[in-house]
Length: 154
Ligand SMILES: [Zn+2]
Image (tube, rainbow, N blue to C red; front, side, top):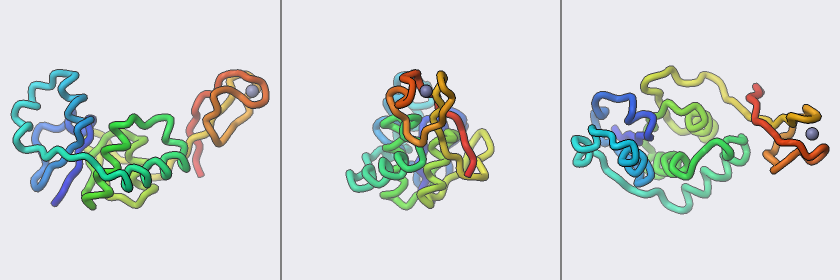
């Protein structure tokens, strides 16, 4: 079985899952940044590869639709895209990544925490006039105040 692991999964795991374990260059860079000592043992076992442009584009489009794009880092997008490329199961404890995996019909599993059971969407509420927007504008189109993301259920 093929797995793609993101940084949150690698942080909360004691051992790599049985089968093929994949990660992206961005994930490895994050582990290096936190000087994770386990990286020494995992270096040989983790296969590191970059996703294709086509898969990245698919992920970015889906993220823009759900509103997860404001919450996902380039590394998160990379992880999702590699999961698309490999047809793998994604291991992650990040809710925004799980949410997008679910929307895109990818297989995913939580590691330390429970996975989400319903699709979340995000709205952007103005801190001034309280109006809710579907898109994350730089500031409120009505009154110019800042927008904050809020969870909404479909
Ligand atoms: Zn406003």
